[in-house]
Amino acid sequence: MSESIRRTPATKRPDLSNQHLLWLVVAVAIALVVVAVLGRLLPPHLMRPGSGLLQSLAATGSLLLLTPFVFSVKKRGGHANVPNRWFVAHVLASLVGVTLVSIHAFASFSGPPLLMVLSLLLLVVTGIYGRVVLARQMAATLGTKSAAFIPSDPDLKSKLRKVINDKIALLQQIDPDADEAVFSVTLGHWLRSPVQSWRYTRLATRESTLVGNRTTVPVLQAWWRIVHLLLAWGFLFGLLVHVFLATFFAGYVADGEEIYWWHLTKW
Ligand code: HEM
Image (cartoon, rainbow, N blue to C red; front, side, top):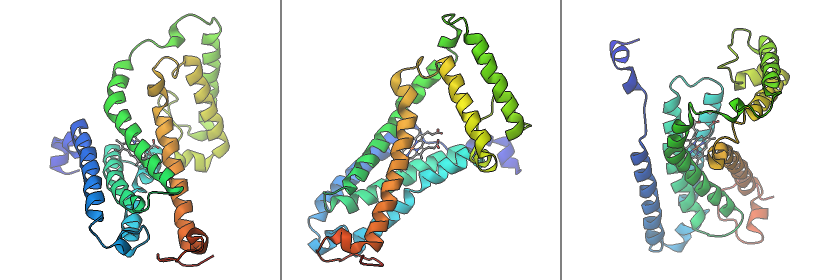
C-alpha cells in the first residue's frame, strides 16, 4: 500500500454529493431540450432513430447503460474493493447513457421502445429519490426500535430463535467461516451452492418479516430498492429484445417499410 493511501484513505473513496447529482440531472434535461431544438435544424434523414448517427449514439448509450449491471454483479459478488467507485460509475454512466439513448428514441416518439425510455426516466427518479431523500430518512431510522421488540406476539422470540439457529446451521454448509450476524448471500454462494443459498435467502426473508423490517419503515423506504431493481432488470430485458429484433429481425421491425439501419438479417 502506498504512503499516500495509508495517510488519506478517505480521499480514495470517490463520492458524488447530492448537490452534484442534482446538477447533473438538470444538465441532462437541458442537453435533451437543446438537442430537441437543434435536431429540427438537421437534415431529416440524419434525425431518424436508425440513421448512422443516431444508431451509433444508441449503441454507445446502451453500452454505458450496462455499467449499473456490472456494479450490481460486483457488489453482490463481493468483488467491489471500493464499492462507492462502482456506485458513482453506475450513476455517471447511466446519466450519459440515458441522454444518448433518449436522443435516439425521441427521433421517432412512438412504439414499444418508448416504454424503455419511461423505465429509464423512472430509474432516474427512483434513483434520485433513494439517494437524496431516503438515504437521509434511513440514517434517521437506524437505531430506532423495531416492531419485533414490541411484545405483541409471545411466540415471536422462539420463532426468531429457530430461524436464526436454522440460518447458523445452513451457514456451515455455505460458508463455514462466515458470521451469521453480518453474512449475506453473494453471487459466488449462489453459483457454488444454489439450493442452500436459496434456503438461506428464504430464512433471511422470514427473519425480516418476523422482525417487521418492511412494516416499521415508511412504504417508499421499504420498497424503493425493489422497484429500482425491477425497473433496471426489466429495462435490460427490453433492451436486449429491442437490439436483437432490430439486428436480426429487421424485416419484422420495418413492417413493410424501408430497412435503412445497420442490421445483420432481414427476417
Ligand atoms: C441518476 C440516476 C440514478 C441514481 C441516482 C441511482 C441510484 C441508485 C442507488 C442509490 C442504488 C443503491 C446503491 C446501493 O445499494 O449501494 C442503486 C442501485 C442500482 N441501480 Fe441505480 N440509480 C440511477 C440510475 C440507474 C439506471 C439508469 C439503472 C439501469 C439502467 C440503474 C440500475 C441500478 C441497479 C441494477 C442497482 C442495483 C445494485 C444492486 O444489485 O444492489 N440505476 N441505484
